[in-house]
Amino acid sequence: MSDALSNFEGLLREALAPVDPPEDLAWRLEGALTSLTEMAADELEAWELSAMRDPRNWVRPAAALVVGTTAGVALVVLRSRRRGPPPGGLRGARDAAARALRGIGGEAQNER
Amino acid sequence: MADEVQEKSKAQLDAEFSELYRAHLRDVYSYAYYRVGNHHDAEDLTEQTFLQAYRHFERALRESHGRPLRPWLIRIAHNLAANLYRDRSRRPASPLENAALTTPHTTEELVEGRDELSRVLAGVQRLPDDRREALIMRFALDMDNREIARALGRSDGATKVLIHRAIKQLEELVGDAGGGGDSG
Image (cartoon, rainbow over all chains, first blue to last red):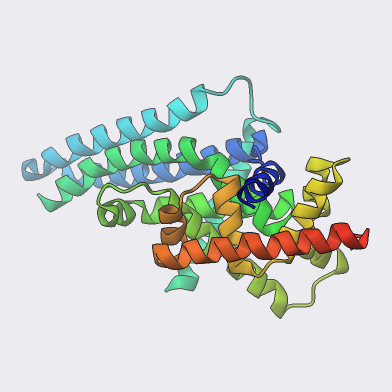
């Protein structure tokens, strides 16, 4: 009985083999995530311009620079592991990112 | 000062999230695929799962106390999949949409020519949601009982029973399909 069970579990494992995601999904997702961090960086940059007038705030832009650089590096590493352009080209990835961001906006509104 | 701490941690958060993404993209996609039964919805589900995970990553890290985050990711996918089914049941769906959600024909392409595996997959699709999900997590994602318990929000003991019953029911379904000579 234990053998039968283990045979069946083996069959089940074979039937439910992991499925590799399509390449263009990975590009789309990475584009969306990169856009999210870039958006955060833009917001910090806008804050930085006004804050630099007050020396008490000088520490913060420096921290923002570190944040932006590291976040960019983290996501660039993701992209550099892939070879060649994304399916549909960079424009396709950007469009997908914009679509995903719009999705997040809608979702955030629904949650509130 | 509190802002500085938050900003500093954001850099680390992005790096750690990238790691999480790389490590579990295939897991989330596999779960999504077997959950919804077609590539199109699985892609949407995977995309939305990671975007939502990104938004709540900091809190998840804080509350995980160092435990692996895969169950949390799969739980997000699980909740989104439940929403997908609920939304579609509310509005009139085309026959094609219904077919994509209720029959495993695209999944079966993975095992074409292998009747036994096809019967297993057909049986998995016929299981109650919680049993089907537990089996997907165990066999497609190789999650242990504790991880599955966290993903489903159940106790370890209840999860063990759930998996045991799921396998038993599936064996019966597959046996019936094989004995009848027609898997439906």
